[in-house]
Image (cartoon, rainbow, N blue to C red; front, side):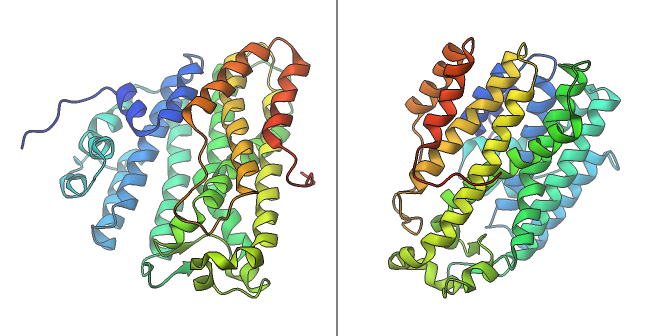
Length: 344
Protein backbone atom coordinates (compact mmCIF):
# COMPACT_ATOMS: atom_id res chain seq x y z
CA UNK A 1 0.00 0.00 0.00
CA UNK A 2 1.36 3.43 -0.90
CA UNK A 3 2.44 5.74 1.88
CA UNK A 4 0.16 8.67 2.73
CA UNK A 5 1.33 12.07 1.50
CA UNK A 6 3.86 13.76 3.75
CA UNK A 7 2.52 16.26 6.24
CA UNK A 8 4.18 19.43 7.45
CA UNK A 9 5.53 19.49 11.03
CA UNK A 10 2.73 21.91 11.90
CA UNK A 11 0.07 19.49 10.65
CA UNK A 12 1.68 16.56 12.46
CA UNK A 13 1.76 18.53 15.70
CA UNK A 14 -1.91 19.34 15.31
CA UNK A 15 -2.71 15.66 14.75
CA UNK A 16 -0.72 14.23 17.66
CA UNK A 17 -1.65 16.79 20.30
CA UNK A 18 -4.47 19.25 19.83
CA UNK A 19 -4.02 20.74 23.32
CA UNK A 20 -0.28 21.38 22.92
CA UNK A 21 -0.87 22.67 19.40
CA UNK A 22 -3.08 25.41 20.85
CA UNK A 23 -0.27 26.35 23.25
CA UNK A 24 2.29 26.27 20.46
CA UNK A 25 0.22 28.55 18.23
CA UNK A 26 0.21 31.36 20.80
CA UNK A 27 3.99 31.32 21.36
CA UNK A 28 6.12 34.06 19.80
CA UNK A 29 7.55 33.16 16.42
CA UNK A 30 11.09 33.44 17.78
CA UNK A 31 10.68 30.22 19.81
CA UNK A 32 7.76 28.42 18.18
CA UNK A 33 9.84 26.35 15.70
CA UNK A 34 12.37 25.17 18.29
CA UNK A 35 9.80 24.19 20.91
CA UNK A 36 7.53 22.63 18.30
CA UNK A 37 10.38 20.53 16.90
CA UNK A 38 11.47 19.35 20.36
CA UNK A 39 7.89 18.29 21.11
CA UNK A 40 7.51 16.54 17.75
CA UNK A 41 10.69 14.53 18.30
CA UNK A 42 9.74 13.71 21.90
CA UNK A 43 6.40 12.37 20.68
CA UNK A 44 8.24 10.31 18.06
CA UNK A 45 10.47 8.69 20.68
CA UNK A 46 7.45 8.15 22.95
CA UNK A 47 5.66 6.35 20.10
CA UNK A 48 8.70 4.11 19.65
CA UNK A 49 8.73 3.25 23.35
CA UNK A 50 4.97 2.64 23.54
CA UNK A 51 4.66 0.21 20.61
CA UNK A 52 3.96 -2.75 22.88
CA UNK A 53 3.33 -5.19 20.00
CA UNK A 54 7.01 -4.94 19.05
CA UNK A 55 9.53 -6.88 21.21
CA UNK A 56 11.26 -4.90 23.96
CA UNK A 57 14.80 -5.25 22.60
CA UNK A 58 13.69 -4.02 19.19
CA UNK A 59 12.14 -0.93 20.75
CA UNK A 60 15.26 -0.28 22.85
CA UNK A 61 17.42 -0.58 19.74
CA UNK A 62 15.15 1.80 17.83
CA UNK A 63 15.17 4.30 20.69
CA UNK A 64 18.96 4.11 20.89
CA UNK A 65 19.30 4.68 17.14
CA UNK A 66 16.91 7.63 17.34
CA UNK A 67 18.91 9.12 20.22
CA UNK A 68 22.12 8.72 18.24
CA UNK A 69 20.65 10.71 15.37
CA UNK A 70 19.50 13.48 17.70
CA UNK A 71 22.98 13.62 19.22
CA UNK A 72 24.49 13.85 15.75
CA UNK A 73 26.58 10.75 16.33
CA UNK A 74 25.57 9.09 13.08
CA UNK A 75 23.65 9.84 9.90
CA UNK A 76 22.40 6.37 9.04
CA UNK A 77 18.83 6.56 7.80
CA UNK A 78 16.30 5.25 10.31
CA UNK A 79 13.83 2.65 9.12
CA UNK A 80 10.84 2.42 11.45
CA UNK A 81 8.53 0.60 9.05
CA UNK A 82 7.81 -2.39 11.34
CA UNK A 83 7.06 -0.01 14.21
CA UNK A 84 4.88 2.22 12.03
CA UNK A 85 2.83 -0.77 10.85
CA UNK A 86 1.82 -1.51 14.46
CA UNK A 87 0.29 1.92 15.09
CA UNK A 88 -3.48 2.10 15.34
CA UNK A 89 -3.30 5.90 15.28
CA UNK A 90 -2.67 7.36 11.80
CA UNK A 91 -0.98 10.37 13.41
CA UNK A 92 1.51 8.21 15.31
CA UNK A 93 2.16 6.11 12.23
CA UNK A 94 2.94 9.32 10.36
CA UNK A 95 5.36 10.39 13.11
CA UNK A 96 7.44 7.27 12.52
CA UNK A 97 7.16 7.34 8.73
CA UNK A 98 8.34 10.95 8.63
CA UNK A 99 10.96 10.64 11.36
CA UNK A 100 13.77 11.43 8.90
CA UNK A 101 12.08 14.66 7.83
CA UNK A 102 11.62 15.71 11.45
CA UNK A 103 15.25 14.94 12.31
CA UNK A 104 16.34 16.92 9.27
CA UNK A 105 14.87 20.06 10.82
CA UNK A 106 17.56 19.94 13.50
CA UNK A 107 20.03 21.13 10.87
CA UNK A 108 18.18 24.43 10.58
CA UNK A 109 18.72 25.34 14.24
CA UNK A 110 21.48 27.58 15.50
CA UNK A 111 24.20 25.79 17.45
CA UNK A 112 22.89 27.19 20.75
CA UNK A 113 19.30 26.14 20.05
CA UNK A 114 20.42 22.74 18.79
CA UNK A 115 22.28 22.13 22.04
CA UNK A 116 19.17 22.95 24.09
CA UNK A 117 16.98 20.65 21.97
CA UNK A 118 19.54 17.84 22.20
CA UNK A 119 19.80 18.23 25.97
CA UNK A 120 16.07 18.06 26.62
CA UNK A 121 15.60 15.09 24.27
CA UNK A 122 18.50 13.28 25.91
CA UNK A 123 16.79 13.58 29.28
CA UNK A 124 13.33 12.70 27.98
CA UNK A 125 14.53 9.60 26.11
CA UNK A 126 16.47 8.47 29.20
CA UNK A 127 13.16 8.50 31.08
CA UNK A 128 11.46 6.59 28.28
CA UNK A 129 14.20 3.98 28.25
CA UNK A 130 14.04 3.71 32.03
CA UNK A 131 10.29 3.11 31.78
CA UNK A 132 10.77 0.42 29.14
CA UNK A 133 13.26 -1.48 31.27
CA UNK A 134 11.34 -1.03 34.53
CA UNK A 135 8.09 -2.34 33.08
CA UNK A 136 9.63 -4.96 30.80
CA UNK A 137 7.75 -7.83 32.45
CA UNK A 138 4.61 -5.87 33.31
CA UNK A 139 1.15 -6.75 32.02
CA UNK A 140 -2.41 -6.83 33.29
CA UNK A 141 -1.65 -9.96 35.30
CA UNK A 142 1.64 -8.72 36.72
CA UNK A 143 1.65 -5.10 37.86
CA UNK A 144 5.03 -3.48 38.48
CA UNK A 145 5.21 -0.43 40.73
CA UNK A 146 7.82 2.19 41.32
CA UNK A 147 9.54 1.47 44.63
CA UNK A 148 10.11 4.87 46.22
CA UNK A 149 8.95 8.47 46.16
CA UNK A 150 12.43 9.35 44.89
CA UNK A 151 11.89 7.19 41.81
CA UNK A 152 8.62 8.99 41.08
CA UNK A 153 10.25 12.40 41.46
CA UNK A 154 13.11 11.34 39.17
CA UNK A 155 10.67 10.06 36.55
CA UNK A 156 8.57 13.23 36.54
CA UNK A 157 11.75 15.27 36.12
CA UNK A 158 13.06 13.20 33.22
CA UNK A 159 9.88 13.28 31.16
CA UNK A 160 8.48 16.70 32.10
CA UNK A 161 10.47 18.73 34.63
CA UNK A 162 13.37 19.01 32.20
CA UNK A 163 10.95 20.50 29.66
CA UNK A 164 10.38 23.42 32.03
CA UNK A 165 14.11 24.12 32.05
CA UNK A 166 14.29 23.86 28.27
CA UNK A 167 11.30 26.19 27.82
CA UNK A 168 12.80 28.74 30.22
CA UNK A 169 16.24 28.75 28.63
CA UNK A 170 14.76 29.06 25.16
CA UNK A 171 12.59 32.00 26.25
CA UNK A 172 15.52 33.61 28.03
CA UNK A 173 17.60 33.42 24.88
CA UNK A 174 15.02 34.69 22.41
CA UNK A 175 12.08 36.40 24.12
CA UNK A 176 13.33 38.33 27.16
CA UNK A 177 17.15 38.07 27.16
CA UNK A 178 17.68 41.35 29.02
CA UNK A 179 14.88 41.15 31.59
CA UNK A 180 15.99 41.36 35.21
CA UNK A 181 14.83 38.02 36.58
CA UNK A 182 15.97 35.63 39.31
CA UNK A 183 17.09 32.87 37.00
CA UNK A 184 17.77 30.26 39.70
CA UNK A 185 14.29 30.73 41.15
CA UNK A 186 12.72 30.75 37.70
CA UNK A 187 14.43 27.50 36.68
CA UNK A 188 13.47 25.77 39.93
CA UNK A 189 9.84 26.83 39.47
CA UNK A 190 9.86 25.72 35.85
CA UNK A 191 10.97 22.23 36.89
CA UNK A 192 8.13 22.03 39.42
CA UNK A 193 5.73 23.28 36.74
CA UNK A 194 6.67 20.37 34.46
CA UNK A 195 6.59 17.83 37.29
CA UNK A 196 3.14 19.03 38.27
CA UNK A 197 1.74 18.53 34.77
CA UNK A 198 3.16 15.00 34.63
CA UNK A 199 1.84 14.16 38.09
CA UNK A 200 -1.64 15.25 36.96
CA UNK A 201 -1.36 12.77 34.07
CA UNK A 202 -0.22 10.00 36.40
CA UNK A 203 -3.08 10.53 38.85
CA UNK A 204 -5.68 10.87 36.10
CA UNK A 205 -4.46 7.71 34.31
CA UNK A 206 -3.96 5.55 37.41
CA UNK A 207 -6.69 3.01 36.63
CA UNK A 208 -5.74 2.72 32.94
CA UNK A 209 -2.04 2.31 33.74
CA UNK A 210 -2.78 -0.42 36.26
CA UNK A 211 -4.46 -2.42 33.51
CA UNK A 212 -1.29 -2.06 31.45
CA UNK A 213 0.70 -3.46 34.38
CA UNK A 214 2.11 -0.09 35.46
CA UNK A 215 1.77 1.62 38.82
CA UNK A 216 3.48 4.98 39.30
CA UNK A 217 2.38 5.30 42.92
CA UNK A 218 5.41 4.10 44.95
CA UNK A 219 5.10 0.72 46.62
CA UNK A 220 6.62 2.10 49.84
CA UNK A 221 3.79 4.63 50.07
CA UNK A 222 1.11 2.08 49.25
CA UNK A 223 2.43 -0.18 52.02
CA UNK A 224 1.61 2.54 54.56
CA UNK A 225 -2.07 2.25 53.56
CA UNK A 226 -2.13 -1.52 54.01
CA UNK A 227 -2.75 -1.99 50.30
CA UNK A 228 -0.78 -4.14 47.89
CA UNK A 229 -0.43 -3.07 44.28
CA UNK A 230 -2.92 -5.70 42.92
CA UNK A 231 -5.52 -4.36 45.38
CA UNK A 232 -5.76 -1.22 43.26
CA UNK A 233 -7.58 -3.17 40.56
CA UNK A 234 -10.57 -3.33 42.89
CA UNK A 235 -12.61 -0.13 42.92
CA UNK A 236 -13.90 -0.74 46.46
CA UNK A 237 -10.41 0.00 47.85
CA UNK A 238 -10.81 3.66 46.94
CA UNK A 239 -11.50 4.72 50.56
CA UNK A 240 -8.25 3.16 51.80
CA UNK A 241 -6.28 4.68 48.95
CA UNK A 242 -7.88 8.14 49.24
CA UNK A 243 -5.58 9.66 51.95
CA UNK A 244 -2.46 8.76 49.93
CA UNK A 245 -4.10 9.82 46.67
CA UNK A 246 -5.02 13.18 48.22
CA UNK A 247 -1.41 13.64 49.27
CA UNK A 248 -0.35 13.35 45.66
CA UNK A 249 -3.20 15.60 44.54
CA UNK A 250 -1.87 18.25 46.90
CA UNK A 251 1.70 17.72 45.71
CA UNK A 252 0.62 18.13 42.10
CA UNK A 253 -1.37 21.23 42.97
CA UNK A 254 1.57 22.77 44.84
CA UNK A 255 3.78 22.17 41.80
CA UNK A 256 1.24 23.82 39.51
CA UNK A 257 0.95 26.80 41.84
CA UNK A 258 4.74 27.11 41.63
CA UNK A 259 4.16 27.15 37.88
CA UNK A 260 1.65 29.97 38.36
CA UNK A 261 4.26 31.94 40.34
CA UNK A 262 6.68 31.26 37.49
CA UNK A 263 4.17 32.53 34.94
CA UNK A 264 3.57 35.75 36.85
CA UNK A 265 7.31 36.33 37.30
CA UNK A 266 7.76 36.57 33.53
CA UNK A 267 7.73 40.09 32.04
CA UNK A 268 4.13 41.20 31.74
CA UNK A 269 4.66 42.52 28.22
CA UNK A 270 5.33 38.93 27.07
CA UNK A 271 1.65 38.08 27.03
CA UNK A 272 1.98 35.21 24.57
CA UNK A 273 4.44 33.26 26.71
CA UNK A 274 2.42 33.89 29.87
CA UNK A 275 -0.77 32.67 28.21
CA UNK A 276 1.01 29.55 26.92
CA UNK A 277 2.01 28.79 30.52
CA UNK A 278 -1.34 29.70 32.07
CA UNK A 279 -3.51 27.41 29.95
CA UNK A 280 -2.04 24.04 31.04
CA UNK A 281 -1.94 25.26 34.66
CA UNK A 282 -5.64 26.18 34.67
CA UNK A 283 -6.62 22.93 32.95
CA UNK A 284 -4.39 20.93 35.29
CA UNK A 285 -5.81 22.55 38.42
CA UNK A 286 -9.37 21.91 37.26
CA UNK A 287 -8.45 18.28 36.55
CA UNK A 288 -7.12 17.93 40.10
CA UNK A 289 -10.31 19.48 41.47
CA UNK A 290 -12.37 16.83 39.68
CA UNK A 291 -10.03 14.00 40.68
CA UNK A 292 -10.64 14.96 44.31
CA UNK A 293 -14.30 13.96 43.83
CA UNK A 294 -13.86 10.96 41.51
CA UNK A 295 -12.90 7.36 42.23
CA UNK A 296 -9.35 7.09 40.79
CA UNK A 297 -9.69 3.30 40.61
CA UNK A 298 -12.68 3.52 38.26
CA UNK A 299 -11.39 2.69 34.74
CA UNK A 300 -14.60 3.35 32.83
CA UNK A 301 -14.95 7.06 33.56
CA UNK A 302 -11.60 8.88 33.44
CA UNK A 303 -11.64 12.54 34.39
CA UNK A 304 -11.44 14.75 31.33
CA UNK A 305 -11.70 18.48 30.64
CA UNK A 306 -13.81 19.02 27.54
CA UNK A 307 -12.69 21.01 24.52
CA UNK A 308 -15.41 23.52 25.23
CA UNK A 309 -14.04 24.07 28.73
CA UNK A 310 -10.50 24.38 27.38
CA UNK A 311 -11.65 27.07 24.96
CA UNK A 312 -13.43 28.85 27.80
CA UNK A 313 -10.25 29.02 29.88
CA UNK A 314 -8.31 30.26 26.89
CA UNK A 315 -10.71 33.05 25.97
CA UNK A 316 -11.23 34.17 29.55
CA UNK A 317 -7.49 34.34 30.18
CA UNK A 318 -7.08 36.58 27.13
CA UNK A 319 -10.04 38.72 28.17
CA UNK A 320 -8.87 39.10 31.78
CA UNK A 321 -5.19 39.63 31.03
CA UNK A 322 -5.26 43.47 31.22
CA UNK A 323 -6.76 43.32 34.73
CA UNK A 324 -4.42 41.63 37.28
CA UNK A 325 -7.15 40.98 39.86
CA UNK A 326 -9.37 39.26 37.31
CA UNK A 327 -6.38 37.31 35.97
CA UNK A 328 -5.59 36.02 39.48
CA UNK A 329 -9.21 34.95 40.02
CA UNK A 330 -8.80 32.45 37.19
CA UNK A 331 -6.43 30.29 39.20
CA UNK A 332 -8.57 30.62 42.35
CA UNK A 333 -11.56 29.31 40.40
CA UNK A 334 -9.57 26.50 38.79
CA UNK A 335 -8.24 25.35 42.17
CA UNK A 336 -11.65 24.95 43.80
CA UNK A 337 -12.06 24.29 47.48
CA UNK A 338 -11.85 20.52 47.75
CA UNK A 339 -8.32 20.31 49.13
CA UNK A 340 -6.57 22.17 51.91
CA UNK A 341 -3.91 24.58 50.72
CA UNK A 342 -0.52 22.78 50.62
CA UNK A 343 2.79 24.35 51.41
CA UNK A 344 4.54 24.94 48.07
